[in-house]
Image (cartoon, rainbow, N blue to C red; front, side):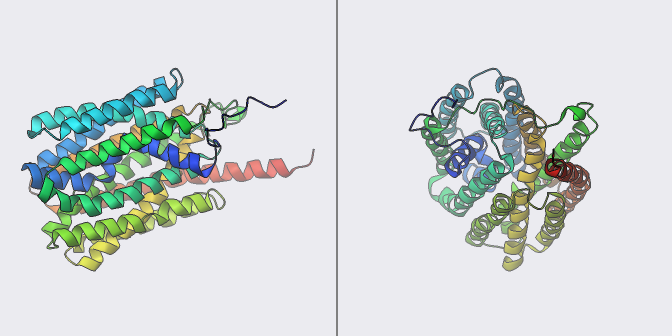
Length: 402
């Protein structure tokens, strides 16, 4: 007996269009992260904020998102996710439009913290829905693909518009993204919780499930914090190192599109070859690429560094999120991982603002980020190996004839 038929206007729950729409849903509340370099530069060059003030705006926006994502852990299993998403999207559009008229640092910090709270609730909801799909790794890969593709367009164009129109293009682009996402919502299916948990009954003790989960989310926090500490100031780094505004924005835009190779690899390879090997190679490239930022005064090296770190960022994060999604059938661990991710994304710019505000300079910032990434590598590889081994064991059990 077949289940209820899907309305004709609804797209298939696990097809490519659904992955794209879900990527927009899980991105809308946090898209400012993908154009953070343009926003920080816009606040400095367009409104006269100091580097420290601009970094604090970025930090509170993302800390608010972490709090909102915490709320989503409870709402995702209790409230209709579509209704929650609509309310959040309408609120985000209003806040972004209001942000155009704010000129003071204190008022901007207060308003963007509210934006972060609403956006975090939306993103956590979207991540929880992705956790209910048949292949979360692929959906998370599409999430990064959309973020990098549109983020590249943003960092290419927006810094060039700030001297002409001020910060208005920055916040209008965010409002437009939310509007497009709102139009997509009716076409998504319902995505109820999966009927059976992923973990087996003998995993209930927590030894196999919780230990890899804790290590994975710790690695996620450090990896996101280290990357965001540099990304928030990456445009400023290029300009301070001697590149022109057009050279820096052009390199960032091109590198962000090149970085699409990272999530594309995730969607193509999936878990076919396991996670351990890809994460190991990806983290080695991450460390090497970030070290190149010490020579950002050379345009080619600045471009290569951004390309390398962008590709590996888009490769590593989907696998880390996919790992966390395996531990719960309702999508709560995916929502919880989004909280940790946002705490990392918020802590990076805040710590960077302190480093630069103290006069330590960009070299100290780069070295601090490298240390955090090295520790993240140490933490993420054991759970990846454990989950790969469990997958191989399950495959062998399935091949045993009854």
